Amino acid sequence: MFARFGVRVTVIEAQPRLLPAAEPEAGDLLAREGIDIRTGTPVAGVSHDGRRFTVSLYGEAVTVERLLVAAGRRTRLAELGVAALGLDPAARVITVDERMRAADGLWAIGDITGVSAHTHRAMYQAGIAVRDILGTGGPGADYRAVLAVTFTDPEIGQAGLTEAQARQRGIDVRTGITQVPWSARGWIHKAGNDGFIKLVADAGRGVLVGATCAGPMGGEVLGALVVAIHAQVPISSLSTMIYAYPTFHRAISDALRDLDKKISPACRRPAAWCAYTETGKPGADDYPHGPCGP
Ligand SMILES: Cc1cc2nc3c(=O)[nH]c(=O)nc-3n(C[C@H](O)[C@H](O)[C@H](O)COP(=O)(O)OP(=O)(O)OC[C@H]3O[C@@H](n4cnc5c(N)ncnc54)[C@H](O)[C@@H]3O)c2cc1C
Image (cartoon, rainbow, N blue to C red; front, side, top):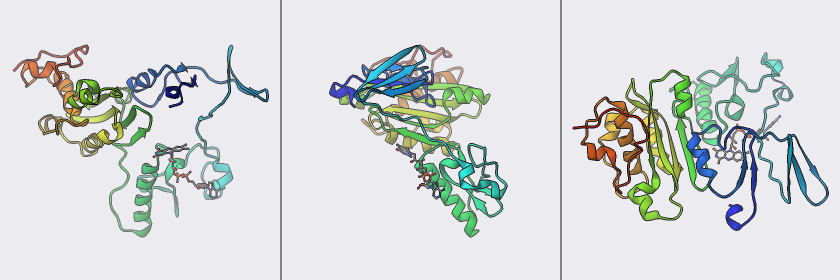
């Protein structure tokens, strides 16, 4: 936002890319703003001469007028006195079971459980803990479709596993991707339509295990895919349902078309349908895929 107002902005990130927990395409998208982005650059120290900050970066330095520190938070379990309950005070998180039980008569929810640091997840866990305390039953925690929305512009919504996480788990991964500007709504939207929808599928089970929606209202578009991941809706159902024209969520069907080409040895749809999105832009054909035919 500051960069768009003409401020010279430098982002310093210790991890190899922006949004390290998200798909690499998301970090690349945010790097297009004319901001000086230094990734893989840990900060060695900061000094202030009364007028400006100097941020030392092992070998070089950046001098700036204003400094925003957004380096995360850490738990301090020792100060909570968890040792009295037999828990490890040196641990970073309190480990809980699927009903949020940490020890006899002790439940923990939220950031301190280390699942993901988001309000919606803390509230989800709170509901489970309350049901368990009251003995009213109900399902335990299911983190299949843990989601996060980064409220940048473009907005980035991500649910379930990234492609890399799915591969690490040994899943037979296929991905489908489309660009928002190629969709009818993206084309209508014009300026500010940057974004993409990426799907991560378990080809063996025929279901989605992850999705990223970046672009205008990316977090809202993600809603449909969160349902698909959580409820394990078959990809064959997602590919044959109706998506309203011309909405941003309709681009999901473009990403599914791209996925379809890779998930079955011979695409069940006409070749022309597979190769092009509805604005006539090519589908993401830079991915190797099987023959596409009727
Ligand atoms: C800048 C920022 C932006 C965020 N944006 C989003 C967002 O857009 N969407 C989203 O989903 N999440 C967001 N989060 C994360 C979200 O705020 C947390 O995940 C959420 O608040 C976790 O809830 P919690 O109950 O675990 O912890 P908290 O909300 O931190 O609550 C813990 C409470 O415990 C109190 N406490 C701590 N120690 C003690 C003690 N010894 N005795 C008594 N009380 C104590 C604290 O004062 C605090 O009130 C954001 C976080 C930050 C920092």
